Length: 368
DNA sequence: AAATCTCTCAACCGCCGCTGT
DNA sequence: GACAGCGGCGGTTGAGAGATT
Image 1 (cartoon, rainbow, N blue to C red):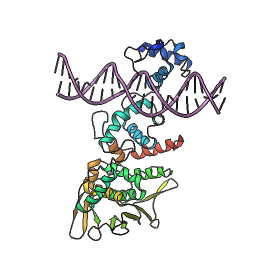
Image 2: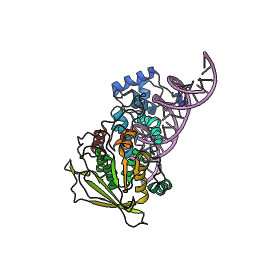
Image 3: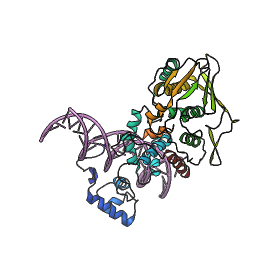
Image 4: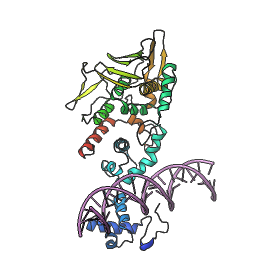
């Protein structure tokens, strides 16, 4: 790096850590003349620093509106969400976090968040699970028929699903939300995410997503759990997974029910009418890896003689976060390193509102 | 207590884009 | 249009603090 322990450099310009005296000079000058004109500032202020160094010192440290201390839980969530949209645009991210500098956010990302995402098996660049296609194929071939347990984490799975296919995400949402005792339970976080991608602004719903652990659900498999048609009755709803032919590697997903899918209508969330069924194709490996990650790794399954397989979804959700919502993606991404002490213990209670705020903020700032 | 290792973050570097001439 | 200067951005570094052996 460019830090010089000696603090001296050619041209007589000083480098390295700033002394309190230098800080005072810089502060005094900027208070009188305002920031800017960085090239002439050090000379006028009596500093033996380059203008760039003065600017950085001011913007990253001396500015009066800079917030000090650890990043809050909300800030951390915001960084992750914004980074998933903006990438390494630290200055843009910083613009959405009052009092935080791009340098500070960048450091925090590199030293905390990035490591944690990697630890969770999530690529910090793409925000998708670190799985290659071979792994997906392997999961496909081994787990659907063998009850194997691929070591995938649930939040990463949902994140991946969100990138792959909206309808598939809806299916997962439907599956997981069924563990709630509330029949009108919806996954607002994922809905917001989808709507964000579609450029739709939604009002944050008020449903409390922190439900008690759900009951054992039944996943009725046709033809002894053959993959060519998988019917998923869920609290009055039913989604069909159809395989075009036994050898085909593409599935279609038909959502033919209400109330687990919701739509945005004039800023209000409303149940999707039954006649608005959707059918979309997606590749078998993608679908299979996700479903089987859900069913194989974290959900206990026990097929019985009637061809009905029971899945205990409560284990899935409780093992990930205390929240029963599929929005646990964002929750679990941010459950370590909270105030340095209580790692992996803090839950989110503001993800949806935060997503909403970020979305609006980005729109307001013309970033989306 | 000392040596070593690990982590954090302030600060620098090089590059790029914008603006003025 | 070409060039130079400047400000801003993202990547990188290494001193210092804290943790571990």
